[in-house]
Amino acid sequence: MAQVRAELGADALILANKRVGGQIEITAAVDVEHAVATALPARSGNVQPARRSVSADTPANEIQLKALEKELDRLRGILEKELGGRNWQEATVARGPLSALRQRLLRMGLSRVLAGELLDSLPSIERLDKGWQLIQLSLAERLQAKHIEQIPGKITAVYGGTGVGKTSTVARLAGADIQRLGPEMVGLITLDNYRIGAQEQLASFADTLGIPLFTANDRQSLSLALQKMQGRRIYIDTAGMSQHDARLRGQYALISELRKPVRHLLVLAASAQASQCRALAANFSPRALSGAIISKVDEAQSLGGVLDVVISAGLPVLAYSSGQRIPDDLCEADGIELVRRAVQLAEVSGASPAGRPLRFAG
Ligand SMILES: Nc1nc2c(ncn2[C@@H]2O[C@H](COP(=O)(O)OP(=O)(O)O)[C@@H](O)[C@H]2O)c(=O)[nH]1
Ligand SMILES: [Mg+2]
Image 1 (cartoon, helix red, strand yellow):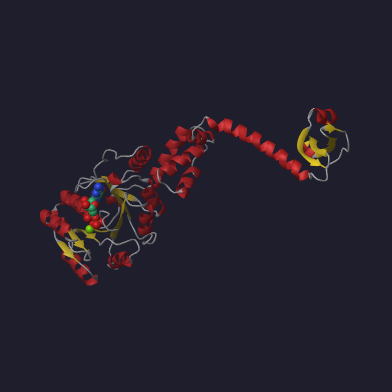
Image 2 (spheres, rainbow, N blue to C red; image 1 turned 90 degrees about the vertical axis):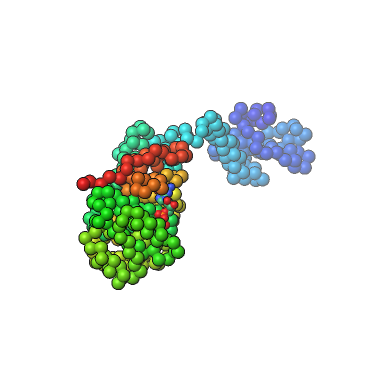
């Protein structure tokens, strides 16, 4: 090495050596950027100054590769030193508030598409807490929360998957009307003829409260039931179907053919998978439904999925339920409260206290 340095200077680097006959050939470089190398044949370690040229056995590529390896080692050292002491979250914040906000939205269960839209709508922000506040407000606004009485129509039909809470919702909405208007102003119809015992729950509710309940299965029986209950506010319970069952759309078509103003409501369970809710909503064309009721908020592990579905389907949220009691557990739709719960669920597991009970004017 001393001989190499004496020959080529203090910056010289030995890149390779090999035995050639009785001599050792040393490949050394002085300026790696220009890949200038020198081969020094030596006898028994006795280095003789010789040709100052690039060795034919050691192509420039090899020299560049060695230099590259050295540079990579240096960069790896810097990276390890930089990231070694940090956890992932700190690293995210370090990349800027937008990146940290995206992580929070995804953790809530929102899709990447909605998270991106919310972030795009933000004015430029410097502080994370300010950005987070604005983004929660923007999400709450996009939920289009409305009171159900803002939707006109004396007939209300409730659709949804099996066991999501359709019958409970019908009973809750009818119960609120009974309190407000009296039992003589309210009536029920069920289209749920598919499951044995499906009507019993609603029949016992109708009996207890003294309101009529009719069963319908086609256009004629439906028209007849409506005729018999003329002047009443009518709630139609439908049969729960899988999201892929064409009968779900069949029931909607049957009710739409009445050519009367109907509030068509979709019940989506917050405890169900977002993909299931999305597939259910996809059965209806964009303006077919008047809005959504989110059920089983108390059972949900995360709320972002169902909120994402109602926003992307353009469905206003009209109420949500958070327990099994009838009629108490139906709450007024409140965008801020739903977002608060979604954030809370993302932060800690476990349900939060009940919201404001749904109240009707008059
Ligand atoms: N935990 C909880 N259970 C609910 C809620 N809404 C309905 N349920 C329960 O879910 C089950 C199915 O409800 P039901 O109204 O019969 O659903 P349907 O099959 O869609 O008519 C019943 O045991 C209800 O008491 C809710 O908001 N939270
Ligand atoms: Mg039912």
